[in-house]
Length: 135
Image (cartoon, rainbow, N blue to C red; front, side, top):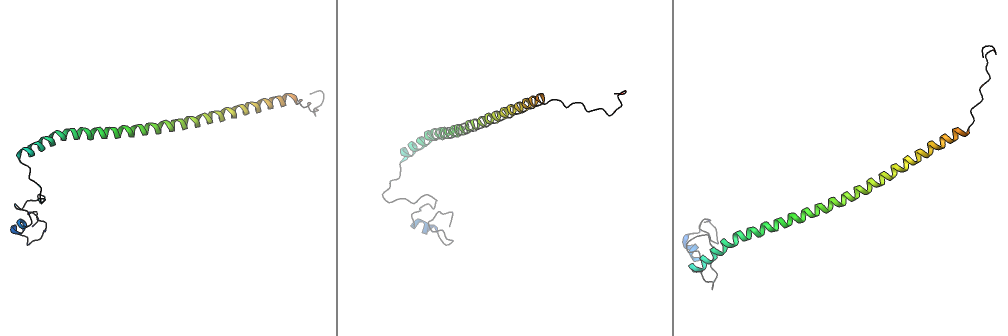
């Protein structure tokens, strides 16, 4: 039976069969190992005290490990953000340089156009087709 904690769990397992397998009380305890001694009351009390003392200490250590992992994760994210910031700054610098070059070329083209217009003589006024008295 399942509640009896026997090694063989079958519907026909009885209390006697459990006792024969080493489960005297039919509980789900681990089977005794040959040559292993059962701890006396003092040993059990010491184990319980140790478990109580280790419980909070283990919890603190676990929290410390989690905090260290979160700190490492934060540092990695911060490093990634700094790297991305550097890339964006470099890209912005390139775009600013390109914009400055475009403005410079635009100013040069405008100045060249002004010089070309200044050198080109204005066309002579066309001969008037109006009679001289009106013109």
